[in-house]
Amino acid sequence: QVQLVESGGGLVQAGGSLRLSCAASGRTFSSYTMGWFRQAPGKEREFVAAISWKESNTYYADSVKGRFTISRDNANDIVYLQMNNLKPEDTAVYYCAAKSYYINLANARTYVYWGQGTQVTVSS
Image 1 (spheres, rainbow, N blue to C red):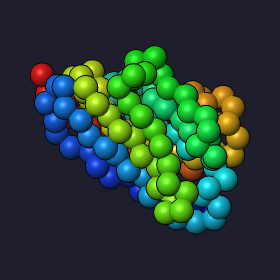
Image 2 (cartoon, helix red, strand yellow):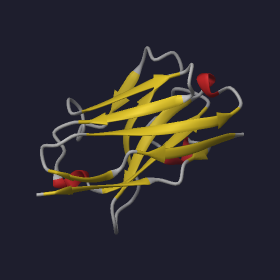
Image 3 (cartoon, rainbow, N blue to C red):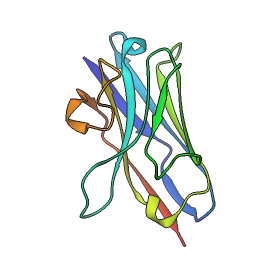
């Protein structure tokens, strides 16, 4: 069992930056592939980024590539999402999630554990 708690959301102007954190507790965090998803009102949950357990592999949605960076600190059981050059269309609730294998990364249904989400609002 893994518990995930996101933090770091807030209100920011377009062009600004935020860093989201996801603190994990429970067993063997370092062995899980971690992902970030987001969901805007009236829309389906959308994949943002994922990172393998060794940090050697990362994968991004085209919409955030070059602006967002996912990273992890296995010693402290935290995964981060650095978000730069934010746009109003990035406004959503952001969720972190965990899964066992580094496959089907964009498919939310393959993730086993989820956090409660943190709101990110980007004003124009």
